[in-house]
Structures are given as structure tokens and as C-alpha cells.
Amino acid sequence: MTRLSVNINKIATLRNSRGGNNPNLVQVAKDCERFGAQGITVHPRPDERHIRYDDVFALKKIVTTEFNIEGNCQEQKFIDLVLANKPEQVTLVPDVLGQITSNHGWDTISNQQYLKEIIKVFKNAGIRVSIFVDPVVEMLEAAATTGTDRIELYTEAYAHNYSADKETAIAPYVKAAETAQKLGLGINAGHDLDLHNLQYFAQNIPALDEVSIGHALISDALYYGLENTIQMYLRLLA
Image (cartoon, rainbow, N blue to C red):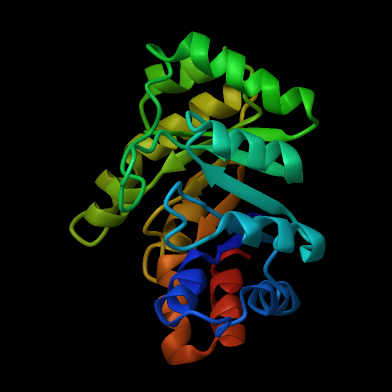
């Protein structure tokens, strides 16, 4: 069964918009787990515009499922944060400074040596590593030689094209997942997955370990409530 990790960045964005501690990020994380989420994901950025670095320390103390920290490992501050907290998983994303949201995977060919070195740093600390990749077979093949445990398929293209032609939209992801499976890589996925496109994706991607969903899930919770929304997403993954 594919696990659901809830990205709580948007909760932090709402909190930060007014200052103070409403909504309480730690309590929301606890409630997400209580409502059935099998993981909590955060993606701190250097400007701390949503998740703050001290949030990560607070969350590490209370998360009882799987804690996944995403971010730009080319920032030493991020590396130090992850090593200080030792989450179950770190997801390496090739963000650039000031980027609004992640919008591309690693070029695992040109960044091969760098990825080998940084992945070793985290694995030596006992942290499972996943790297963000586009659904391109060559990038999957190169990812397999970096030492990473998993890849996270960047699903924005699938989500964007789903309504027009879902079979065409998912085709490169199926091929990428099959390649990853043959190479012995675990498979995660995330970005723009929602109540409309998630089930088809999960049903067609072999050996899908985990999806990380934030923006759509938190937006849906405004209408359906957080507990009900998490259950809705879990049913699509069952």
C-alpha cells in the first residue's frame, strides 16, 4: 500500500501571515497523524517563509510516523538542519534561491559526482535518501549509481496533462517507475497530486512507496475538514 505523507508547509504559511502560533503547526502535525497520515513532510527554505528551521526541531520531537525533510542540499544550512534532526528520510530537491515551488528534478548525469558525495553524507548518518527526478529513463539510470535509496517522481507534468489525456500523461511515469524498480530504487512521487488525479496515478505506477501531498490536500481541507480530507486521500491509495 502506498503511504501518504502530508506536507504541512501551507499550515506554516498561514501561521506566518499573522505572526503568533495560530494555527499551531505542531498540533496540526499530531492531528494529521491521528487522522491517518503515515508521514509528515516539510520543505524549509533559506528565507523561512513557511517552515522555519526551529519548526523542524519541534516537529522532530513529536512526529511518530515518518518524518521527511525536503530541501536544497546545496545550502549548508539545510545539510546541518537535517543532520541535527536525523529524520527517517531526506528528499533532495534542486531548488534555486527564491524559488516559489520546486519545478524540476535533478540532472543526475551532470550532477553525478556531487550527488554521490552528498548522499553519502546523509546515509552515513543513518538517513534514508530520496532524490527528486523527472520521469526520464536516462535520469533514473544515472540516479541508480548515486547511492540514493529512492527517487521521487516530479508529477507536475502528469497533473497538468491529466484532464486532457490521462493515458498519455502517465505513460512516461510508468516507464520511469518500471526502470526504477528494475534498478532497485524505491519510488516516491509528489507535486500537484490531488483528489482528481491521485487514484489513477497510484493504480498505474508499480511499487509506489509514498506520495507527499501538501498544497492540494490543505486546500481541500478548507472545504471538507482536515480529518475527512486525509481519509479521502487515503481511500484513493488503498
